[in-house]
Length: 73
Image (cartoon, rainbow, N blue to C red):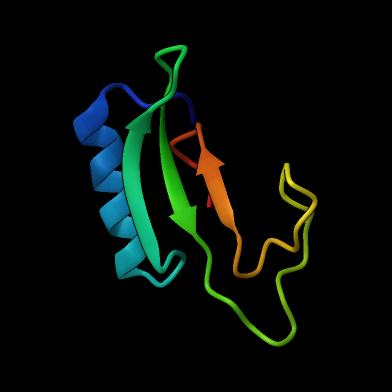
C-alpha cells in the first residue's frame, strides 16, 4: 500500500499486528531520518518463518523487524 501517513496510523498497525498474532510486541517509531515505521518482534516457532533473513542475517522467526510499508507483515 504505502508509507505510514502519521504516527497514529503506525500505532494502529502495531496494535493490529499484536491482536492478530503476527507480532508479540509492536510499537510505532520514527527513525533518525524521520521515517515512520513499526518495529515488531515476530513470534518464535520451531520451524521458523519461511522468507528472507532480517537485515542482521537472522531467521525472521523470533526476530525484530522494522516495517515501513503499511501493508507489510
